[in-house]
Image (cartoon, rainbow, N blue to C red; front, side, top):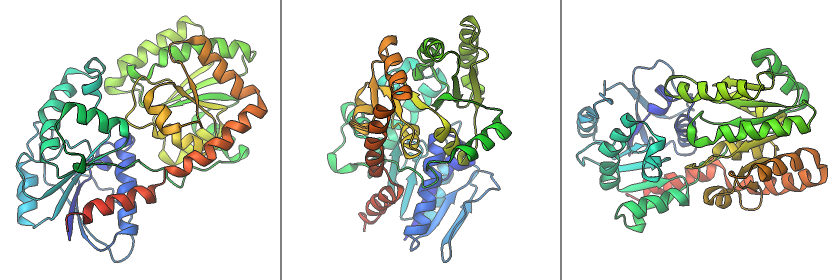
Length: 375
């Protein structure tokens, strides 16, 4: 069997959720499913995925005009190379217009269907130009949560059998790191010292970071100025305007000494950020799947999250759920888990069990089943 997979997540989106997903997908397939011949669409990138023995992998640069959604080269390649399955792990944005083999789409994000004001006009246009075609043409749609499945089914007439919910996994690198190793990495590479609360994710308006910064002022006062707020996430390009707005808020609140914008960090360094944090806070108004929250739990750090449907379903009783519109509720949730040792241990105990549900080997096995369902 010949499987073609779009590698855009690793050639252009490496430090995003789609980049992590694509990396773990390929690594898992090469390890657990070496039988097929793999063709990877690899846009002008020298870096390759480390593969095991006896794996047939080809890296192909088709010079795809993604900006104009011109995917004719993909169609031609599939036909001429007799590809059996084509998988677009990036929301179906590279599913060709014409049906030339079995198509699989992985959908991580349907934000334009939830609140179009959260995305710019360029992305909104692209989404509606390509996503309906991907949904229509895909023989199998993999979604990363029940929430995403529900949104798609509410907006498109899709038979139940065409949609599989396959949760992303938590990489094995996310384990608790000891205090000394955390301090060494964070101080030497990122100039971060002392105790802190952590946010990890994109610097985007839907993440509700203004509220987090405002609540942090009260939390820091309660701690006698012994805490910092560390925000990890890309602050450049289209994120920059929102980042500058947050910087201005930090200055207005006189928190420049305590709020640290780290920007993007190396994937392998994230376990150190999680492990050293007193807690991880995610007050996002919308998530496709809160992977950073699961990663924090795997590193044995308590998580405080917005009390909304997705977090309730994914975290169950393991997370500390707060009303993201209520400053006092957020304050109490964070302070309680930082300074009440017995409560903190109860939370961590629940998290240790809950995180076991989200493993990449489970994801890969279900993805293989989706592939083999065509034969």
